[in-house]
Length: 90
Image 1 (tube, rainbow, N blue to C red):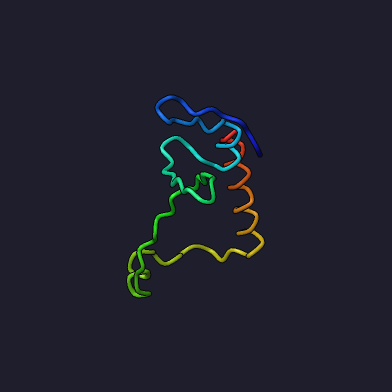
Image 2: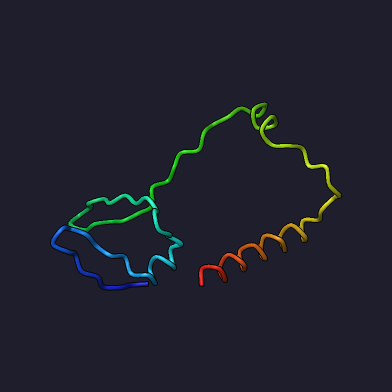
C-alpha cells in the first residue's frame, strides 16, 4: 500500500491509517527511522528475546495435561485466531 503524507514544521509525519492497519502497527508502536541512500526507512523495532536454557523453558512452561489434540485441530484453532484478530482490527 502506498500513501502520501506531509511533514509538519516540527518534523512530525503522520503514517496514514490504511498503512498502519496493513502493517499491524498500533498506537505506541516503537519505530526505527533509518536514513539510506537519500530515503528514510521506517521499520518496527524488534525486541531481542531473552535466551534461556531448555531447563529454564521447562520450568516456565507448564506441561500440557489435557486430551490429545490433532495437528488439524491445532491448525484450525490458529486459523480461527488470525481471522478473529483481523475482524477486531476492522
